[in-house]
Image 1 (tube, helix red, strand yellow):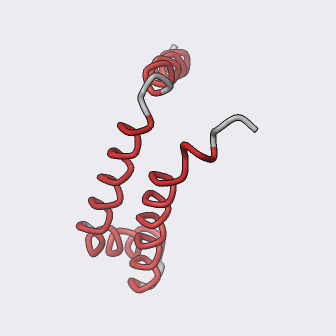
Image 2 (cartoon, one colour):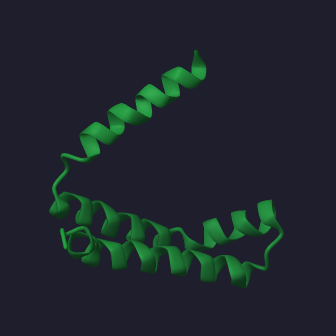
Image 3 (cartoon, one colour):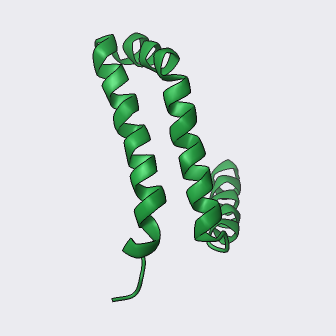
Length: 83
C-alpha cells in the first residue's frame, strides 16, 4: 500500500510539473542553484560526515550541482524542442 501511494504521488506530481512553463521551471532551477551555493558549507560538511569525502570534494560537488542547475535552467527548453 505504501509503495502504491508513493507511485501515485509521483505520478500526480509529474502531471502538475509537465504543465509548468519553462520560465517557471527556469526560476525554480535558478533558485535551487542559489540555495545550494548559499548553503555550500553546510552541505559540504554533511557530505564529509555521511560519505567520508574531503570537505574540498564536497564543496566541488555542490559547485557542480549548482552549475548544472544553472545550465539546465538556461538550456532545457532548447534541449527539449522537437527535432
